Image (cartoon, rainbow, N blue to C red; front, side, top):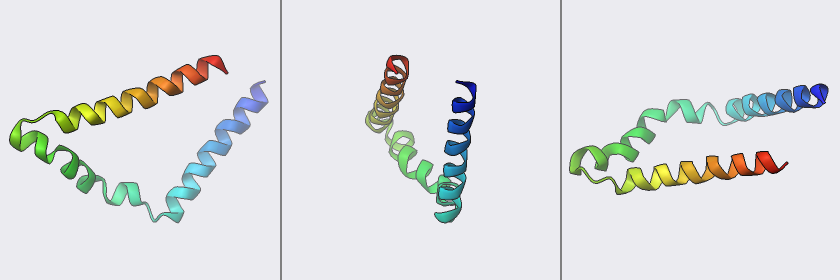
Length: 72
């Protein structure tokens, strides 16, 4: 089972590196813009709707991943 886990982790890491290089490091180049657009309304208008939506989306994604991981 350890060999399978090692190769799965290696496959995921390799896939992430390949896709990052093929996309031209998109997630790193535009990180400032992404945060600026996401949190601009939150800082200016003290409106937490955008932040709540983002937190809910992240929480549900991580939660579902944990549930699926436990049942596998």
